[in-house]
Image 1: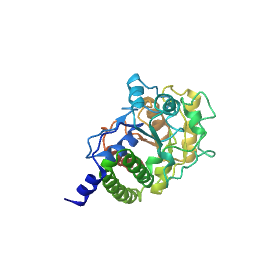
Image 2: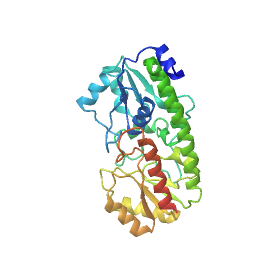
Image 3: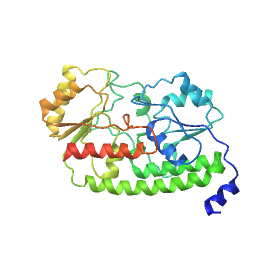
Image 4: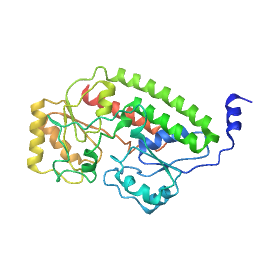
Length: 302
């Protein structure tokens, strides 16, 4: 019998557990740790949905109510879970991954050309005011912090399902190694990019710090409401004054608005997606997401 086989035998049979993951990057890391077992996590925020202002469907509530463990970033991000877990899933282990050992959350950037999106109720999305009160929750965009999340996920799953602990731990070790290699690769790819850039959602501070790039500033615009003439003029003036090379938006923003900004300022327009909305769910999603972000920076800032 192999060493892993002996370990599994000593741990006892795996009985199966119900695992819920909040958003797609978290789901991907959880699925990677669980790969090779008979269990599959359930994703709450699917497809192109955003956790900002997310409303849970009855099927989502049902999945959460049956969960043995819920993996999420934390109450500064998935506000809908913060409100419902104590009520419908008191039995579940609630694992806020932003609190994992090794993770040091960053504050939201304010001042200079970084707009505080809690200041203007007309442009704030539902949930933004709550988010602004805490730390920047987009910790998964730093591969080192993603590795810390993977380690925490494996530890929590091993407690709940010791029969699969050797698999969880082996998968986690492999993922940590792969994340380290990916970080080195992305650093090399981005070493020659240059030029200032703005983002329409200040979600990339962890990515920027990990890979040695830095945004010039951030605009805050509600993607569901077209900005007015005065607001667009303010954005154009800011881009021109900063001589920015690129403006990064997200998939939900209107193409017509972006085309107008590109035409009037001469800046390139890039698209960033911190959640991987168009990527198939699964263990590879996280790595494809990080590659997509890197390609966007390469193309817009080269």
